[in-house]
Amino acid sequence: MKLLLVGAAVNAYVAYAETGCCFHATADGGPGGIVEQLFDGQNRIGQTGLKEGEYCINTQGGLVDSSGRGCILTPPTSQWQCDAGAQPSKGFYVGADGTLGYNSSTQFWTCPTGDNGGWNIYGNQPIPNEPKCIATKLFADKCKTSEPPADKPAPPPSSQCPGYLPKAYEFPHLIVPVDEAERDKCYGTSYNGTAGRGLSSVFNFDIPMAAKGKICGLHLGYHYSGSIKALTDVQSNPGDIRFLFPTQRQLETSAYTFADSSDGFKFALLSDAATEQSTFANLPRVKQDLGQQALAPGAAFDIASMACPAGERISVWLQAKGISYIDFFQDYNPCPIGLYIIPH
Image 1 (cartoon, one colour):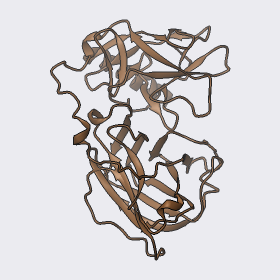
Image 2 (tube, helix red, strand yellow):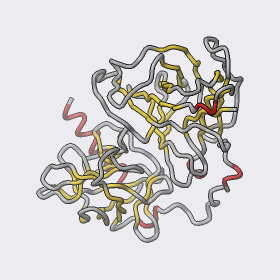
Image 3 (cartoon, helix red, strand yellow):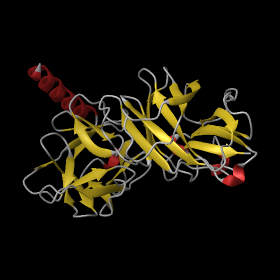
Image 4 (cartoon, one colour):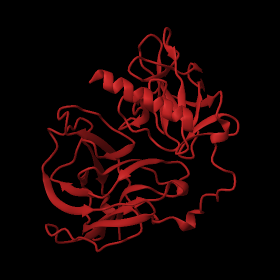
């Protein structure tokens, strides 16, 4: 089996080398210097005794390393590493000045590991609660021609966003990923919402007293494409829950990975609020099933409508069904993306 995996990895590297372009990378930020790799494919800077990394990029913006491993931004931390058997994350590119970018952003983060002076590299966010993380840029020594064509249209203005946030809206004050495969593992707080491949996320909302007597809707960043589902166990002061999901080109300060939505995503209201110590094993029970929704970029979905529980903290659980997968940086900047509660 190992020989088969090695052969497949070599073939993957050769295929990328033939159809794309290969480069080495350096970092400007943190300790800076050459991007190197651990034996397991983690990309690092500043650590002595490691081998310089080499990466090949294809026309879809996927990267593999010299061992043929697919390079990905792993949820929930978005650490950049190359894993055997992984499908490469698409969306990488090399700009005209050699800057490596991902999904229209050239900012990466680097955070100390405590391992022989090494620093890991992360995507669009630093590790939560790690004050030593530093913004960095990565530069390729080749492949500048892989930059997206200059004649591509500019991102549309915010007036074309698939969904909007009114003056009064509720942003999640805590996002906690949990892992069904590692039921007792505590990830702590995250800036990303992730659902799929065993992971799911809980979003905490603190509903202000000013929302008393209003409807709270749960919304997801897409154009509205279905009816609002009322919560039957709440009888007064209703509200909305919404999920907003712009396209990549509509985002200015966020990014996401989206694999498939054919099996849909499931939403639920929990009986109690999650905490930073929440795991899959100790999550509160489901109080109300909010239904299942297929998602696609460029739309906004109304997930549910309920009486605003003024003065309370509530938790909404996002899970993926089947092979569906999403990982997004929750962000209210244009265009807003993620899960929101809208009192009205």
